[in-house]
Image (tube, rainbow, N blue to C red; front, side, top):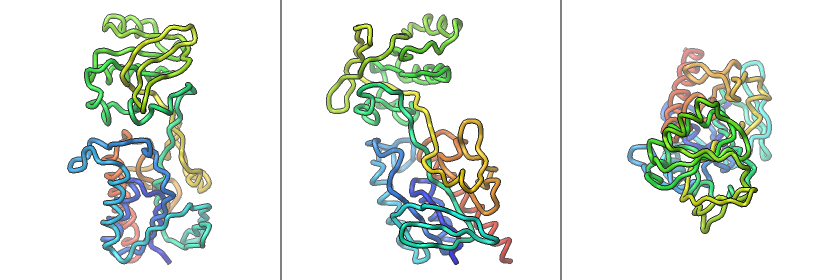
Length: 297
């Protein structure tokens, strides 16, 4: 029987695996290799790894894990998890595994506005997180594409990196009169016309064309993307969710289902950054170890 199965090989799952392996636990990390940041060319904000390609970060992390003989890395999808009396059965295409504990680090999927051409620029000149990519776009003519009221907070954040900012709501009225007045005082133009298409070359945004025929020139910007769970495993296990769609966990990553833990973006409890996900992976792994030690002592 395995001590723990970790599902999801992003920063959270990788770091959880490292901490568990160093605690002499027998574990398997299952990873489909379909990361949320697959479109991202560089990751930022992680000291000693600033600017690294996500694929290179993953390669180095997996190389670290291979030093430990008590961990296996499996590149396959987990199809089903069933809770037994004192364990979990984990079914994949290639076999059935039994584990005492489960860590879900399956992450999230970005849901972009339905705009022609937006996927051509997402991850190259359009991004979701100013903390991750604001420096690279500093002082450029930027756009924020947002279709919901929460975009007002993102306007204020982006303004820190560039005062040359236009907000496009793609045909929606998302701001209050007071918010519109404040944006006007800051000389931030709000365009409520519906967007026809985004244009540019080699992933670099150049113009935004509206359905009324008008156009604006922008060199990059940000998008208020929606988020959804990348996997239904948490839901099938009976893990409770917050209203925002994140999995409910305590301060140590425990879900409401005994023996099931969650780490990384899946909980929506911290900003989606590599360093935060890795930190959560470490915390939840220590929680698993503490629970295993307590049960075995």
